[in-house]
Length: 70
Image 1 (tube, rainbow, N blue to C red):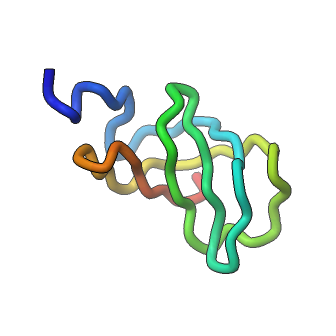
Image 2 (tube, rainbow, N blue to C red):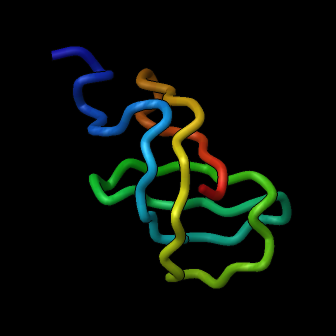
């Protein structure tokens, strides 16, 4: 099994993720499959909030993704 097969997300997927940490430039989120991700520019959100996002890029080697508000 490759690293990419360990991530149940694909580029372009629309999912509801949970905000795990606020940062000065965005927010860290967790996808439903547990994969961590970053949503840049998401500033006005509370930790624990559930938000709809679109997966923009997947880094299979580091087992994480980047996304935008979807």
